Length: 307
Figure 1 (cartoon, rainbow, N blue to C red):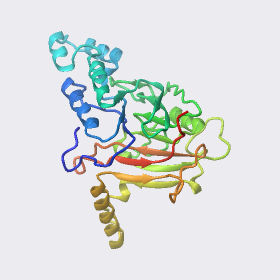
Figure 2 (cartoon, helix red, strand yellow):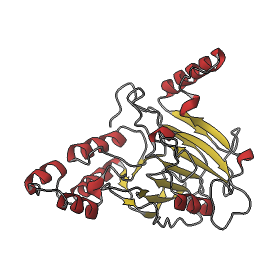
Figure 3 (cartoon, helix red, strand yellow):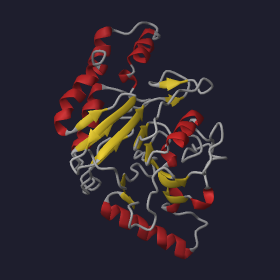
């Protein structure tokens, strides 16, 4: 996916984040296009992770996928479409000159041009069956080693209970991920994967966590706010005329900005309270046939100064 001239974000950011699914079919030409997308964004640092569609990045999964095809595929045709094993990584090595950094799973630290220190935890893994990349069986779970002091968590999939409803109205998020986030309490957790879950929510944590944190028991819903979600933008036949007009005006304003803006600094109406709140953002920009492009997010909050 690439931004068209009328959709390309114009705001300047300190950091841009891509939460995975750089491609649809993990082909070489798609990776080249996916690198052009962050190149178009005005930010000195652009952090990128993979998603389940980027299966050639998960080399063991890709090798198995190829080996399972019967009759066997012509290796030269595979190489032509998907490149050599790990060829994508060389593309991202070359993209570092444009400020694009591919993150493997784990903790990463950055000093920003604005003088702030940024600690990021990244994970590419999502719960699913089949032959996608970076997947784990839902009944087995996954260990997300998010330490206290991490500022931003970037994952491909959502935590269970937070903007993770799929089209069949089932929650598709990971309970292990929710528990890890609840214990670490980062300032921001951004993800994608569940496209229909686009939106943002400022969550206030309860003072004392349960032994196995979940969205049922460990969120103080009275002190949490939904920043925005798709139903707040798209018209419904049940909308009153004033609600419909409010949605139209809101969408027009966002379209002018070419993004959805949410600021949570000290002087804002809803400042982010570190270690008490986490801003969750489902940043999936690929939408439906009716709404093919969902707005990117532009969020502001404060970080500690670098030493």
